[in-house]
Amino acid sequence: MRQLSVPGGTVAHPEPPKDARAVRRAVLGDAYVDAAVRDTRPAVAEFQDYITGTAWGVWARGGALSTRDRSLLVLAMTAALGRMEEFRIHATAAPRAGVTQEEIDELPFQIAACCGVPAGNAALRCLTQVANRSADEV
Image (cartoon, rainbow, N blue to C red; front, side):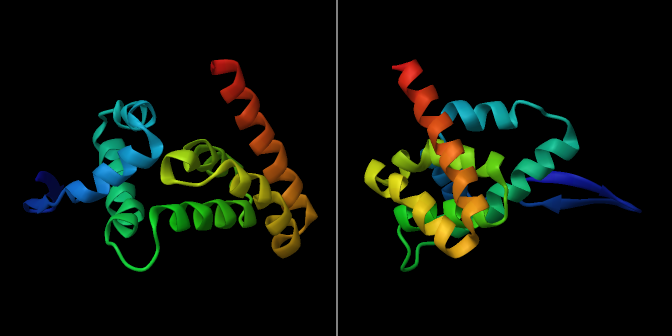
């Protein structure tokens, strides 16, 4: 438990649940998470705890959506919002979440149909960059 300074003293600030941390690592990979948490400045560490508990806590809570389903939803939502850096991160991680290459190949069509051709084009460009980088790493 981390202590946060507040006027008149400190209060305990809970760390994100272990399940949320485990899901984040399983989906994004150790290298990505290790790089994200390497900066130990208090505000950065607190932000990492916040996004792990909030965003990845949803993934860890169970429910009717599988990790694969959640990955596809995140890809669709980040593309719809034009958040292509997050889209790239999750496109790279999608196979670890159980998303097949055939499903990844289908994304630009669905994104273009529901979010507009510019969003579909941006997703396709990003997916091409991810595929080319992965091919170079093999």
